[in-house]
Length: 302
Length: 319
Image 1 (cartoon, rainbow over the protein chains, first blue to last red):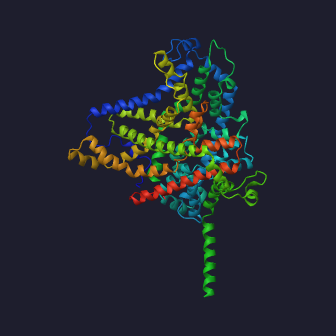
Image 2 (cartoon, chains in turn red, yellow):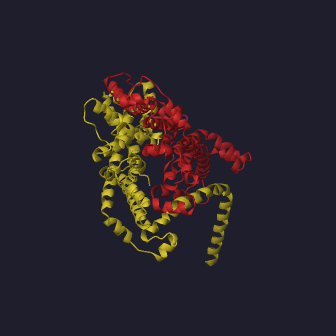
Image 3 (tube, helix red, strand yellow):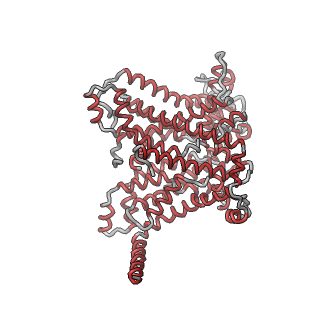
């Protein structure tokens, strides 16, 4: 398919179809549909926030609160004082920084190697990787493998098996391949070696794509729970998502003893949910274009 | 004759050595990937042999293969297991309907965003509708539970106003509907992006020509926009067909985490959750692996078949 430079995404050219810029009846209908859908997405978050700040006595009288006359931040205080939540937050931060850096490193070098023109064994490796996209061994052999590697009940099980994500690796590979070949040739004439060409020329040029891939990894790590749930029974290495999961499914065992006058179970649950999504809410509007860029470039070139 | 062969061989090895040396940096870079895929993808693939054995963890995979080989006995056993076929039917039903629904919702969302003329609102709406994709199912399931559960806001509102409460989490049909709608809620905006990008790539000349011919907006959508996204749509459909049997473990696991009603749980039990239950309850590894292998083989066959069909219909395949 057509190659598109990353600075000139087709998405940037808005309002293309048709020169008829009149705001017609159809636009009103479309506007209403989109508005309703957007409100359906916003409402749960709004409701959750209201519940988290509604004092228990008001909530008891009317659990279907849409608005609260009095506000309390006791639940957030409870969340901020909860050791399990902070512990989960710490583990998730290790994944978020350590895990993401580890994934970016291995995914980038693999993508770069596979983007270079011809080298011995390239097709073999490429096919070896593509096969894994369509066929896998399933859960049980994977489980036995992880167990025999001695990774159960360690934090490593949430990091090491994620080294390379095939989709993100292909994104990087396609981006490296789209950079002009002359860059490499002229650098070689100037006497640069392979390492210098990669580190000093290709890496700085691919920073936008690195940012995109890094963000995908970061979100994945922030949301990580599956491997932890499967392989770790140790409570001290639960991720934030796992802690939240336990709070929602078994509130009695996982919510600290609270003063029922000032904060109830629902307050605490909603505040905990909010605690896990606030970072995403804060950063997402500014980062959205990077995510979009990744998916668009990947699709157009892949 | 022999001499020529020998010299050819020498030449081959000489050039091989030269090729390896000249690309040594790239080969060094790829070694971690080879190790990674070998360990985390190919060893489990080799591990499917467990499906043909009466696996014993002391013997390991190799030992079990050589000493406890049982052929297709595990498959016969799981096929006899009545729960298995119900689960299989559920998986096919939920998985395929999910593909259809998410495809339609993504295309509709893309059409709406593409057609709408209000720039600022469009940008805002796009941020809002793509956001849920980045939340984990842990969070999304909690949101839906908080709002639609028996004690959630909707039912409290309904009962307060003298209406019958709707038991989304207690009725098998309603719960399945909830699975599909929560999937649309989370993914429609994000999956639409790819179609929006494809639509933006359609040549403006086509629309101008249509304008000259006096085409209406709906006609332009039908005759230009939709055919324009057809190749992308087919590509994505082929890709998603392989995932029919995956049907969303994360979603179902988290949405059912608080349920105790066996009817509802059975109605949304899929192959992945079954394997997970097998793992949790300590069922024989051979049988659980057999279920997993059954799933992988069917998924692979589906991708190949869809790809062939698409190629027969004159579309670009993926393989």
